[in-house]
Image 1 (cartoon, one colour):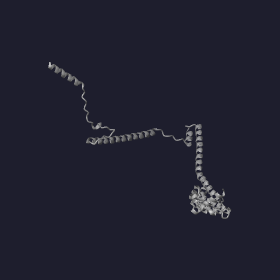
Image 2: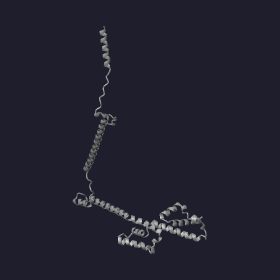
Image 3: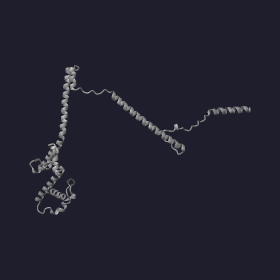
Image 4: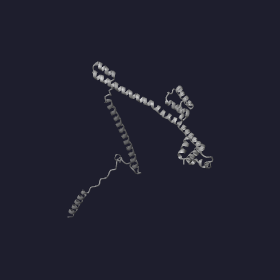
Length: 276
């Protein structure tokens, strides 16, 4: 009886153990199973070795990618060159002489050949006119600019418009020198160069004219002012620090001395007081 109980107990144990699954033992990762997306961490010798393998594998993958991209680029260039070579060459437009020869040989009818020649000659005339227009426009551009610059000089020095004025002799001398000695063309562009050589930049000429105008207005103002009028205001009038910003900017641009600035500010204050 005891043996039967023992045997039944053994059988129950065997059945119970058959339903229990033994968890598998995870094998150690090999070199090929190392994660390629993230560099391994850790300080153990195995971790250091894995990082070395990771970096080597990464470098190999990058080199392979570069080779692949270079191969694709080379194949693309070769394909493009092949496609270009397979295209038929662009046929040149027949010349009038070739069409005439074809008409003489009878391979082109008289009517077709004549119409083609007429069209070609008309197109050539139009192209020649356009080329001539562009050439004339390019040649006139510096002349037009010179004319504008000369007008600015004349506005600053009106006597330049009078060729008989003695002050224009220096300009004429420079002009002849440029034409005769240096091969300049006898045109307005050369005259503009001669004027600048003789008189300097137009901005400086304008500043000189403005200074002369201020001096003339000052003389007229003092001639009209009663004796002793305003003399007690010399210190106030000479305080150029109170001058308008535009006047100060002009002084700087014209390069006026302190004495000239003081004089012009006195004229300005006097005229302003007179116009009240």
